[in-house]
Amino acid sequence: TNRPDLLDPSLLRPGRLDSCLYLGISSDHTDRMKMLRAVLRKVPLHQSIPSYFDNILTRLPATFSGADFSSFASNTLMYAVKRKISMIQAQYDAYKSNVKIRESGSLRTIGGNRPTRIKSLSEFISHLKRSELHFEVNVQDVDFAIEKAKPSISQFDILKYEKIKKEFSPM
Image (cartoon, rainbow, N blue to C red; front, side, top):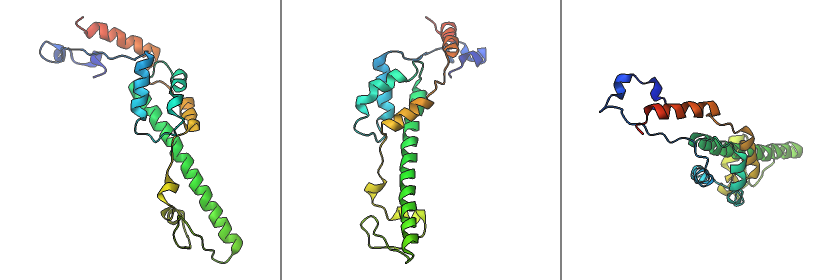
């Protein structure tokens, strides 16, 4: 548990939950870099992002926990997906406008397929090539995520956990 102070004291007797392992918040740059790399390892990053990692770390709060880093990674991905969705929506809107201008039930070649009459956004997407659906997290996505980044643990909480550590640790 992350709240041993809420456990029934009978559970803390010897032979039961009698050990306390406190990990705390890492302030070491190397450890924070490892956490950042770990949470972003499966995120499709633009090639420029890894060189931007030091900048990212200096802009994120020092009290970021592992869960906060994970949330940050999810947010960067969410911003990249939203950006891609907006781009596809704009392409579809342009396609629809082109159809209306021609007023001939216009046909368009999409994704290298034969010309097709497209009636909906989902149909439009189904005709796109896989490469046209590809996206990557870029610097702008990272910057948006940094703006929204808030640590889940306050300085007060850290002091409270340190007190709990002293109370429950045998050393």
